[in-house]
Structure formats: structure tokens, C-alpha cells
Length: 368
Ligand code: ADP
Ligand code: MG
Image (cartoon, rainbow, N blue to C red; front, top):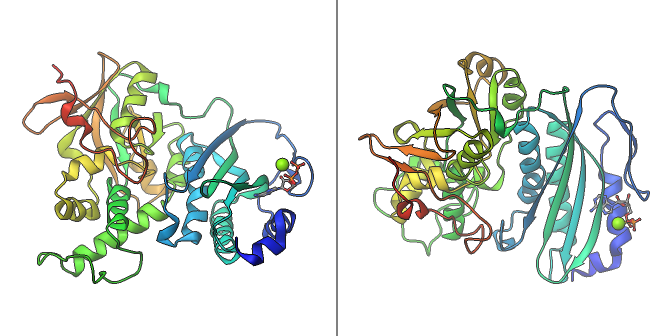
């Protein structure tokens, strides 16, 4: 253990966290320092509560050396869940398990800086948490509370036959960034000397890989877009496990068939490059890689005017439609072939986040 951290001790570290936290949200009566935080309930609206953890060896490798990004991501993935309900994030709790073999106090401070930076961006106040020693790896477990107008939360269950299916951003970036990190590439660094570089890979391709690495390390939750879609989208989910998995959730909860058009999937340029570099299908990375934290939603009306006003720089693509039929997602290929859209990330079916569960769709049952 870092001697500086050992000297500080658990309560010293909690004190350090407490001193750096800024108060940004309304409704907090008492924050860090007592047995529980005190929050004043608001008169109207509904409370949203979500939690997501990041585990060393499953979601990240400490060897990548990006503690600031890790702190940002721990909050961002939770903001993404609030965004996917159409809400506003307010108060966060941080569960921290720290292994004896690191990180150093300096790395922990960088992590907390990243978390505070992200909290500031989204108007969130850290109001409490828990701090423990860990026997096996670093864990960051954030719980986030937010608000949404009464009865307005966007659920997975609202999709209706006749809706169109939309997704924000470009898919496959996070999976591509992960593949790049696993190959030894690092953010804002040149090409590593020990990694073979193919002749076709120019400056543009390298920039696309760097963008993918950024997307993996610091995903941007689509908060303005999510809030703007209240009253427009009928069902919504954030893409945490891949469109294959997440469209399955929409189909199951809404009891409809979700038809995904393969030719309409917006694939991130970094995913095209990493697919070529590793001999994978770009579409596979885009549909089954996961962790893109884009919004996947259905709507009866065209959502583009609403999104153009709320998030003008965010691309949005119509990638399919909702139909009556079995409650499954169906992938429609350009030649008209249809199959059940299988695969996507599942924690109990693959070796861990560090290996994207791509390719699982090929053995899936055919449809039609
Ligand atoms: P208790 O033993 O009563 O649960 P703790 O010693 O665990 O209290 O925590 C003391 C205070 O510090 C509490 O307000 C708690 O919410 C806060 N706290 C502990 N760990 C963290 C953390 N990692 N991040 C933010 N607040 C924390
Ligand atoms: Mg406690």
C-alpha cells in the first residue's frame, strides 16, 4: 500500500473526499460526514435511483493508467441511466473498495478529480458513500439519484407497433477503443514501437482509433438528448450492453418485434479501423460491443427537430422499426435476409468486459 495512503487511513481519505466536494444540487440538507445524508423531498415529480459499478479486471485494467478517466466514467455511466429515463441527475453516493497493492494516493486523487469534474458538468453533488479495503481489485460503485416530472419517465416498455427505432451517435466506438487498449495503444500517445502497424493505416485512421479510445475511457452521457425526448420518445434505453442486447430489452418489455436494419447502423470510424486491424466485422462491433452509452429509442413522430434544438452536434439515425410479432429483436440484412439479433454483452456468459462478446450472433437461430 502507498505509505501516504496508509498514513492518511480510511477516515483521512473520507475527510479528503469531503473537503474537495462542491455542493451543486438543490435539496441537500446534509452531505458527507454523518451516518446518512439528509435530502429534502421535492413537492412534485418522481425520484430516480440507479447504481452501476466499475470493477478492476472486468470493466477496466489499472495498468492502462487512466485514473482521472476512471473517476469520470464511474459517474458518467450512471448519468447515462438517468438520461435514458429522461431525468436530471442530482445526488451521488460513491462506494470505494481499494486494494492493498495500489492505487497510490495520487492516483486516487486523480480519480476523485475526474469524478468531481463530471459531477460539475452535470450538476451533481456527492453526498456520501462507503470506503473499504479490497482483497481483489479496485471497485468504484456509484449510486445516483435524480428527478423526473411525475409520470414522465421514459421506460423500456412503451414501444408500439408502427414506431420507428432511433439511435444517437455512432456505435462500436467503445468496443474499438477497448480492442486498441488491449493491443497496447494508449490515449494521446503515438503508435507503440512493439505493435505492428499496417501500411494502410494513416494519420486519419490513427485519429479514429484515438477517438474510439476516448469514447471507451470517457463515454459522454446523452443527458440533454434524453431530457428533450420526454414527450417524443415512447420507449428508451441507453446502449450499455450493445444494440443487440438493448433492443432485446425493448422488445421484451414492450412485447413487440424490434426490427433493426443492418444497412442503417451508424458505425464509428474507429470501429471500422479496429475491425480491419483485428479481422472482425465492423457491424459486429457496432451491434454487440457495448458500452457506447448512446440512446436507443422508439418514436411515433420524427425526433430530429427536438434533438436538433437540444443537442445540435449529436447525430441521430433511424435504424429500424417496431412491429407486431414475437417479442424479439430481428436483424434485417441489406439483401432482405432476416435473423434474430443475438449476442451482446452478458456478465455471466463471457470472460469479462475486457473481451467484447462479439460474433455471438452468427450461431443464433434464423428467423422468418
Ligand atoms: P458509518 O460507519 O456510519 O457508515 P462511514 O465512516 O462509513 O460511516 O462514513 C462516514 C461518512 O463519510 C458518511 O457520511 C459517508 O457517507 C461518507 N463516506 C464514506 N466513504 C465515502 C466515499 N467513498 N465517498 C463519499 N462519501 C463517503
Ligand atoms: Mg459506512
